[in-house]
Length: 269
Image: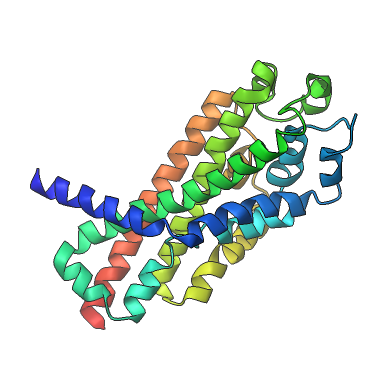
């Protein structure tokens, strides 16, 4: 029981440490990324009678994957706390922290805090854009139902003016931000350099995209497209479940590999 309380206390401290100015920079950055992906449509927010809604901007940025949403938002998710291991390693604080906490508790607390800092900051950015754009246009204009019919989660758009759809979209954005932050943390234990760590989601995202294309992986089986809300594996609920489980499994796997490399560093440095 005492061990669990210590671990929870460590996680809470780590999460509090992640709430810095960088967290809010990510929130602003995500808003700007969505705007930059749809920059030529942004003026329609203020144009009376324009047939656009928040869903239109979300589709053209997050779902269809503009440059900034595919490559820059994953990099932003690393800023709140994924760089912490680099700083602790390079300042020779790592070993003293591990001596106090233990290797396993250190790894678990680091993984949880990094995941949630990346996930929450990215999510807050997505919610902020939606709230700001929602001041000018509706979340979803039901007159656009025919246009949206070919996209996943179409059934969620038919109810309550798009609120269920954006609930699912925010959940996927949360998972995406957390997974990319966790990926950067994993990279940092192999290459404890802040620039490599920040750039790693961009590089890995590009390589994964090329890999999916070379291997001719069906869109219905691509996790990156699940996370964008661009493809599904069946029903909406099944897709959300499979996406969530995939992220949890990958997060656990990345943390185990992080732990293994951390032990090597302690023993050989």
